Length: 212
Image (tube, helix red, strand yellow):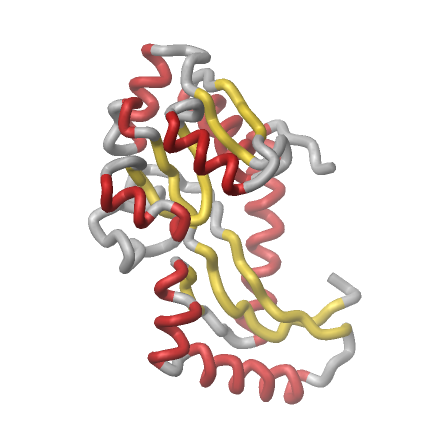
């Protein structure tokens, strides 16, 4: 982007593919099998047509030859209520929303995103482990105006890196909230932005969702 210069990618949000236990799926392969056996019967909850949850739904339909209904909700609380009641059967949402309900068996997390398993649910395999090759991570990073000197951006990066790796701070503000601290360098972040733009375009193309 000609208007901004990369500083650091601060954190990834860990997302989860979750189902109501009544679906009877313990992993992605089993979810696909249920969806094939019950075409159009599984309801996927999202916050709207252009959100990641719905794009993943459409991508799964094309990738695995299945059909699932889309139900958009007005807010995250409504999504959780629908998932707990069984009105919705599947969603793709922040992992932190599910850990308590996973422990009580009210919601079943069958996959998480990211390159490695979440320490909050280390028994749950990642989407990559289950054969999904497209990267669906959500990230939060810092950019500066174009032309900001590299040494100034590197100085900010080093300070962010120091702060996010303070153990108590990291546990309270990231790990416990299903966030993965990154704090990479300006060069690494710049390369990531290029790769992420390609990945995002691929996901949009595969899903058929038009940007709003």
